[in-house]
Image (cartoon, rainbow, N blue to C red; front, top):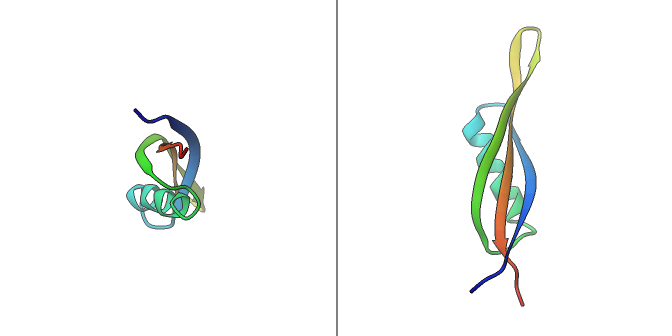
Length: 67
């Protein structure tokens, strides 16, 4: 049975929420191994001049603790 840790991360994209979530996991995987799950907890959008300019996905990722 494994032990898992959960951390909060935020991904961003100028294109979409889906890409923001994908970017978050890709970037986290550069320093965290054995990611098992990613859960989006919040979406928000930065708006400039009445236009969406940055999509953000706040997420919790869980990964197995190595022993």
